[in-house]
Image 1 (cartoon, rainbow, N blue to C red):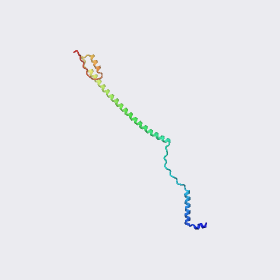
Image 2: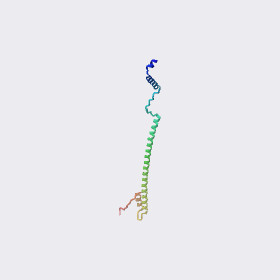
Image 3: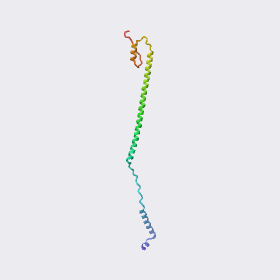
Image 4: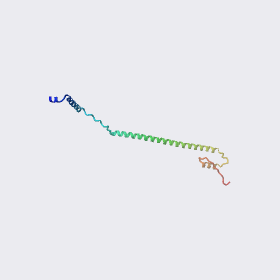
Length: 137
Protein backbone atom coordinates (compact mmCIF):
# COMPACT_ATOMS: atom_id res chain seq x y z
CA UNK A 1 0.00 0.00 0.00
CA UNK A 2 2.81 2.23 0.64
CA UNK A 3 3.87 1.96 -2.92
CA UNK A 4 0.46 3.08 -4.13
CA UNK A 5 0.37 5.99 -1.73
CA UNK A 6 3.78 7.06 -2.76
CA UNK A 7 2.97 7.04 -6.45
CA UNK A 8 -0.28 9.01 -6.08
CA UNK A 9 0.27 12.53 -5.32
CA UNK A 10 -1.60 14.00 -2.43
CA UNK A 11 -3.47 16.47 -4.68
CA UNK A 12 -4.59 13.67 -6.96
CA UNK A 13 -5.67 11.69 -3.94
CA UNK A 14 -7.83 14.55 -2.83
CA UNK A 15 -9.46 14.69 -6.24
CA UNK A 16 -10.19 10.99 -6.22
CA UNK A 17 -11.65 11.15 -2.73
CA UNK A 18 -13.72 14.16 -3.66
CA UNK A 19 -14.96 12.39 -6.78
CA UNK A 20 -15.89 9.28 -4.81
CA UNK A 21 -17.65 11.32 -2.15
CA UNK A 22 -19.58 13.21 -4.81
CA UNK A 23 -20.55 9.98 -6.53
CA UNK A 24 -21.80 8.57 -3.23
CA UNK A 25 -23.76 11.73 -2.48
CA UNK A 26 -25.30 11.72 -5.92
CA UNK A 27 -26.30 8.07 -5.70
CA UNK A 28 -27.60 8.53 -2.16
CA UNK A 29 -29.60 11.63 -3.04
CA UNK A 30 -33.11 10.97 -4.19
CA UNK A 31 -33.64 11.42 -7.85
CA UNK A 32 -35.32 14.70 -8.66
CA UNK A 33 -39.01 14.26 -9.15
CA UNK A 34 -40.18 14.66 -12.64
CA UNK A 35 -42.71 17.37 -12.95
CA UNK A 36 -46.01 15.93 -13.78
CA UNK A 37 -47.54 17.08 -16.97
CA UNK A 38 -50.71 18.93 -16.45
CA UNK A 39 -53.20 16.21 -17.08
CA UNK A 40 -56.69 17.38 -17.80
CA UNK A 41 -58.88 15.34 -15.62
CA UNK A 42 -62.04 14.07 -17.12
CA UNK A 43 -65.07 15.40 -15.40
CA UNK A 44 -66.80 12.99 -13.19
CA UNK A 45 -70.25 11.93 -14.24
CA UNK A 46 -71.86 13.88 -11.40
CA UNK A 47 -69.93 17.04 -12.33
CA UNK A 48 -70.89 16.57 -15.95
CA UNK A 49 -74.52 16.11 -14.97
CA UNK A 50 -74.33 19.21 -12.78
CA UNK A 51 -72.94 21.24 -15.67
CA UNK A 52 -75.51 19.84 -18.03
CA UNK A 53 -78.33 20.52 -15.59
CA UNK A 54 -77.00 24.05 -15.01
CA UNK A 55 -77.03 24.67 -18.77
CA UNK A 56 -80.50 23.18 -18.98
CA UNK A 57 -81.66 25.36 -16.08
CA UNK A 58 -80.29 28.49 -17.75
CA UNK A 59 -81.93 27.57 -21.04
CA UNK A 60 -85.16 26.75 -19.23
CA UNK A 61 -85.07 30.07 -17.36
CA UNK A 62 -84.50 31.92 -20.63
CA UNK A 63 -87.40 30.05 -22.23
CA UNK A 64 -89.58 30.88 -19.22
CA UNK A 65 -88.70 34.58 -19.47
CA UNK A 66 -89.50 34.60 -23.19
CA UNK A 67 -92.78 32.78 -22.57
CA UNK A 68 -93.68 35.24 -19.80
CA UNK A 69 -92.97 38.15 -22.16
CA UNK A 70 -95.15 36.58 -24.84
CA UNK A 71 -97.96 36.03 -22.35
CA UNK A 72 -97.66 39.63 -21.13
CA UNK A 73 -97.82 40.88 -24.72
CA UNK A 74 -100.90 38.74 -25.38
CA UNK A 75 -102.58 40.07 -22.23
CA UNK A 76 -101.82 43.67 -23.23
CA UNK A 77 -103.09 43.04 -26.77
CA UNK A 78 -106.28 41.45 -25.43
CA UNK A 79 -106.80 44.32 -22.96
CA UNK A 80 -106.33 46.82 -25.81
CA UNK A 81 -108.80 44.93 -27.98
CA UNK A 82 -111.39 44.78 -25.18
CA UNK A 83 -110.92 48.50 -24.47
CA UNK A 84 -111.53 49.29 -28.16
CA UNK A 85 -114.68 47.16 -28.12
CA UNK A 86 -115.87 48.91 -24.95
CA UNK A 87 -115.27 52.35 -26.51
CA UNK A 88 -117.22 51.33 -29.62
CA UNK A 89 -120.10 50.01 -27.52
CA UNK A 90 -120.15 53.21 -25.49
CA UNK A 91 -120.35 55.26 -28.70
CA UNK A 92 -123.16 53.11 -30.05
CA UNK A 93 -125.06 53.26 -26.76
CA UNK A 94 -124.68 57.04 -26.66
CA UNK A 95 -125.94 57.30 -30.23
CA UNK A 96 -128.89 55.01 -29.50
CA UNK A 97 -129.82 57.03 -26.42
CA UNK A 98 -129.60 60.24 -28.42
CA UNK A 99 -131.79 58.81 -31.16
CA UNK A 100 -134.32 57.59 -28.61
CA UNK A 101 -134.35 61.03 -27.00
CA UNK A 102 -134.89 62.68 -30.37
CA UNK A 103 -137.70 60.28 -31.23
CA UNK A 104 -139.35 60.99 -27.91
CA UNK A 105 -139.29 64.73 -28.68
CA UNK A 106 -140.87 64.28 -32.09
CA UNK A 107 -144.20 65.92 -32.75
CA UNK A 108 -146.48 63.09 -33.78
CA UNK A 109 -149.57 65.13 -34.60
CA UNK A 110 -150.94 64.19 -37.95
CA UNK A 111 -148.87 60.99 -38.25
CA UNK A 112 -150.14 57.47 -38.50
CA UNK A 113 -148.77 55.84 -35.34
CA UNK A 114 -148.78 52.36 -36.89
CA UNK A 115 -146.56 53.52 -39.78
CA UNK A 116 -144.34 55.39 -37.33
CA UNK A 117 -143.87 52.24 -35.25
CA UNK A 118 -142.96 50.23 -38.38
CA UNK A 119 -140.46 52.89 -39.52
CA UNK A 120 -138.76 53.09 -36.11
CA UNK A 121 -138.45 49.30 -35.88
CA UNK A 122 -137.07 49.17 -39.43
CA UNK A 123 -134.34 51.63 -38.53
CA UNK A 124 -133.44 49.64 -35.42
CA UNK A 125 -130.40 51.14 -33.70
CA UNK A 126 -129.42 53.19 -36.71
CA UNK A 127 -130.05 56.85 -37.16
CA UNK A 128 -131.86 57.73 -40.34
CA UNK A 129 -134.80 59.29 -42.06
CA UNK A 130 -137.91 57.59 -43.32
CA UNK A 131 -140.08 59.16 -46.00
CA UNK A 132 -143.57 57.76 -46.25
CA UNK A 133 -145.72 58.60 -49.21
CA UNK A 134 -149.09 57.56 -50.38
CA UNK A 135 -148.73 56.49 -53.99
CA UNK A 136 -152.40 57.27 -54.66
CA UNK A 137 -152.09 60.97 -53.90
